[in-house]
Each structure stands twice: as C-alpha cells, then as structure tokens.
Amino acid sequence: MVRIRGLVKRFAGREVLSGIDLDVPAGSVMCIIGPSGSGKSTLLSCINHLERIDGGRLWVGGELVGYREYKGRLYELPERQIAGMRQKVGMVFQHFNLFPHMTALQNIIEAPIRVKGEPAATAKRRAMALLERVGLAAKHASFPAQLSGGEQQRVAIARALAMEPQLMLFDEPTSALDPELVGEVLAVMKDLARSGMTMVVVTHELAFAREVGDELTFMDAGLVVERGRPRDVLAAPQEARTRDFLSRVL
Amino acid sequence: MILKLGSDSGVPDVVVPLRHPWTWAASGMAVLIAAAVAVSVATNPAFQWPVVAKYLFDAQILGGLLRTLELTVVAMAMGLVLGTVLAIMRLSANPLLSTLSWLYIWFFRSVPVLVQLIFWYNFGALYPTLVLRVPFGPELYHASMNAVITPLTAALAGLGLAQAAYTAEVIRAGIASVAHGQTRAAKALGMRPATIFVRIVFPQAMRVIIPPVGNEVISMVKSTSLVSVIALSDLLYTAQLIYARTYETIPLLIVASLWYLAIVSVLSAGQHVLERRYRQR
Ligand SMILES: Nc1ncnc2c1ncn2[C@@H]1O[C@H](COP(=O)(O)OP(=O)(O)OP(=O)(O)O)[C@@H](O)[C@H]1O
Ligand SMILES: [Mg+2]
Image (tube, rainbow over all chains, first blue to last red; front, side):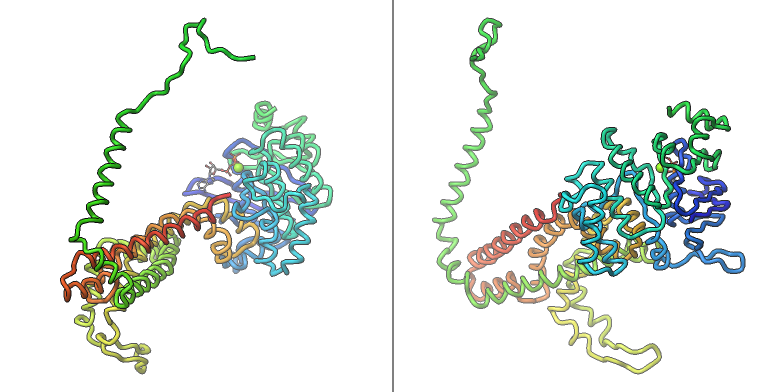
C-alpha cells in the first residue's frame, strides 16, 4: 500500500529525513517510534504530501504521491490532483485539529459533501454510523470545545474514516490526552486494525505496538535504524540506539 | 452550629471593607457637573431647540441622511470585498502579489482620506477622457472623465479605496489567527484551497475580524462627512447648505449630530449582536 524509497526531506537546508526506505503492505499496521525530532511527523506528512519531498520516491496504492515522473524527473502535480489523492489517505493529528466552528456531525460530513459531492442525507446517515462506531452517537450535536480530548480524537478518527480511505496515518494520536482517556482512543484504533485497515501509527504506546502492530520501525535522526516484528524489536533490540531509546522510554 | 468570628483569637468581630471616599466624592462632582451642563444646554436659548425640532425631520436633511447611509454602505462594501482580495494577496506565497498588496496598503493608509477625496474629484484634470479598448483593437467605451467622476463616484472611490487598505489589514490578521493545523486537517481530507478558505479558515477568522470591522463601520459613518469638501450633499453638507442660508448654524449642527448619534447607536447594537453570534463556542 505504501512504498518509500530513498526519501529525503530538508527544512531550510537542514536534512530531516535522510533516505528512508519503508514498505507497508495492504491490511497491515506499521508502528513507528523514535526520539523527539527524529522526523516521524515529517515522514507521515510526506506520505500525503502535506510536505513536499526533496528526494526519493513515495507511492501510495501504486501511485506516485504528489509528482508525475517524466524522463527521470519529478514534476509536482497541481494542488487539485494532490487533493484527489489525499482523499484516499486519512490522517489523525496529535492535537485533533477538529473544526471548532462545526459540531461533531458537521465535522464528519463536511469533506464527504464538499469534496465527494455526497448528498447531505447520505453523508449524515454514514456519519451517524461512524459516530456509533466510535461510541459517540449521543454527542453528534456537540461542538469540539464541549468534548473531552478522548472524545475529540474519536470524532477526528470518524471524520477521517468518512472519506473511506485506503490508508490511515496516526501522528501520536494519544500523546495529548490525559492518561485515563488514552484507552478509549486506542480501543477505536484496535477495532480499526482488526477490520483490516492499513495503518501507519507514530506512537509512544509500546503496549499498543506490541499487540496491534505487524511491524515496528525505530527512527532516529532521519533514518530508519531498526525494524522488525514488534515483540522482537521491543524484547531484543539489535541496535545500540534502539536499546538506548527503549531503556529511556520504559 | 454557628461559627463565631474570633473574639478569643483577638480578631475584631466586624469586618469593614476598604472605603473609597474620594471615588464617591469625585463621582458626585461628575454627576453635578453633568446635570449643570444638561440644564444649561436645555435652557440656553442660543441652542434654539425649536429650530432643531423644525429641521430634525426636514425633507432636505432626511435626503442628506440617506446619502450618508448610502455612502457608508457602499464604501464599506467596497472596502470589505477589495480588502479581502488584498488580504489574500498579501498572504499569498507569490512575492509579486504580496508586494503589490503591500504597496497598495502602504499608499492608501498613508495619504489622508481628505486628500484622496479631493484628488479623485479632480481626476479629470489628469486624464480628461476615459477610453476602454481592446489592446491594439477597437474602442469599447469612450467618455469624458468629468461625466464619469461625479461627486458621488469621487466620494465612493476616495472612501472605499482607502477603507480597503484598513480592512485588508484587519482581515489579514484574522486569517493569520486561524491555527495552521486547521488547514492541514482540511488538506488531509482532500479539500481544495478554495473550499478550505471558504468553509474552514474564513468562518474562524470572522471571530477575530468582526469587532474591528464593526469599529471601522462606525468610523466610516463619520468619515463620510469629509465629502462635504467635494460638495456632495450628505448629512453634514446639507446642514451646512441650510445654515449658510439661514445663519442657524448651531441648531443645524445639532440636528446633524443627533442623526450621527442615532446611526452609531443602532450600529453599535448590531455589532454587539454579531459578536455574540460569532463568539467561539
Ligand atoms: N515546518 C518545519 N520547518 C522547519 N523545521 C521543521 C518543520 N517541521 C519539522 N521541522 C524540524 O524537523 C525535525 C523533525 O521534526 P518532526 O516533527 O518530524 O519530528 P518528530 O519525530 O515527529 O518529533 P516529535 O516526537 O517531537 O513529534 C525537527 O528537528 C523539527 O524541528
Ligand atoms: Mg511529531
């Protein structure tokens, strides 16, 4: 589903990703861990072209993301076409980023109606089903500010799912939450993984990675340092840097 | 059980809040002064209240009032539309667009509106004729500039173009106040730039934009009185025309002031309602 080769990303000349190779097969869950500033968020943002890449290639569902290749060169696509591609990739942010001027229901139906041109009635019916699925049907008329962090994040997941994506990206979805609210969001994500969704999850929840992840990648300083089955990497890390990081996190 | 405040701990039984005798004395003075002013204004025959009453609903004055309202609405609408365009240009990644917008704002905020009004009124001296033509092709429209630039169009150009520069800054600040994560979330859902602006960014910017724009509308009502210099019969100029004839200067200025007070009061109430509607939930 996702294939990344030699991905390079710079911010103002400083290399933040220095040649990432990564594969996420359809239906699998890839967890990414790593110290702050190692480039995890940047990597996710490159996957749906919220950030422009400076080198390498990146495919989602077999399609080159953000560019058209012609005679060995990459030409950036117009925003309109990139928007079309982004519909297939859902994204969940650390700080939820719900639209504060819309209710939970309006947050969810906005993109299906405006982007896909779905009739309002259909969009509402599907949105209510999604809210049911994340356990928030009763809160459909609440504004984000009236919801707890955990509830906001579940609405955000429902909002992404409303576009029926083939791939879901999660950027530390629980790290802005109070500890007692983490569980409800992870439960929704587990349920999603079980339903066969392809997922890339940046997280510090190692228990989640062990239980749900098919593969675990450890990143440091813009590079993939180690990867493998989550229980192997967590129990017996091969690289010194991984061991060092895990000893600090656990 | 009754809680007894501690005579046994040495704390006094009665709590005396800090008194502010001077605040009260000053307030009393202010009320007295206001009352004295009110009495003098009401009883001084030089204010000629009967004359005020006679002209308050005079047809000519009401016509001027209508012109003032018309100028306010149209110039403000020009300011909002052009100001939004300028704000978007200013925030654009394209350096040419953002510099153009910066230049416009710089120029129209620097030159006094009074000067701009007189300038537009005399525009015909610079370009006596107005010609619209397809480049190197036939003429589409031809007119004498004096026919195009009437006092009304000069007033609207002067007030509206200057207002756009102020409104642009307000709108730009409003747009910039919307968290960047909102745009990222909307993009991630596959929304296009125009949809993101109209549906996500602008509604949130409104919250920040409305209070200062409300103030701008109110100051526009009063700025319209500047058009008396180009002989456009707004509320003030109409009053001036009348007292030039009758020498009843003070009462007619009072008539104009009462109408300005009335308009601004209504607008302030409207601003309050709008602010409540757009307040963050
Ligand atoms: N828009 C940006 N402009 C400039 N530098 C940036 C930008 N975004 C990220 N960076 C830099 O890129 C590096 C990687 O950032 P990134 O957010 O991807 O790290 P991360 O692994 O997600 O860290 P964290 O765990 O703290 O979220 C950091 O050094 C950061 O300062
Ligand atoms: Mg991050």
